[in-house]
Length: 141
Image 1 (cartoon, rainbow, N blue to C red):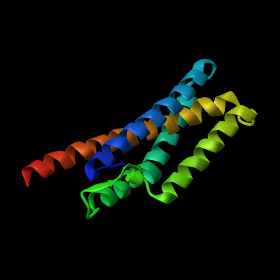
Image 2 (image 1 turned 90 degrees about the horizontal axis):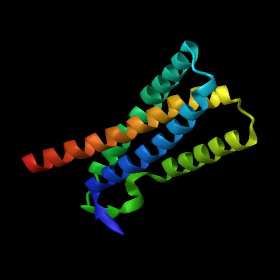
Image 3 (image 1 turned 90 degrees about the vertical axis):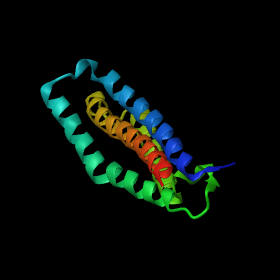
Image 4 (image 1 turned 120 degrees about the horizontal axis):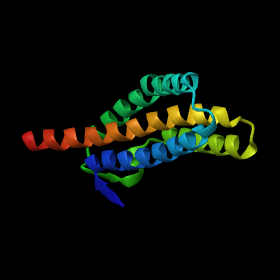
């Protein structure tokens, strides 16, 4: 199914918000017994690292790629490239394995998942804002 290329940004927004909300929920639920200033600080550091060095760049990269498509309509899965789908699959599998195997303590789940989930959620919001900016700019042309 093909959709207008700008709607790929909206689809990315929805996917990233759903993923981020779920990961953040897991982290927050694990925080019940580990709510300390140090753990909050570590979650903020985790958020900053993922947002600044990974997801912020990823949002800019994919937004630019999507907007630069020559054809107006694109296959709906093109909100990501192949490399990003592979990375997403590895991250999801690894995250599930870490939780199910019990290899990581609950404190790690609380701190890391809260920071990571918040960064994912913000990436989704940024995709949504880029969609809105593109729509506004397209109307002004």
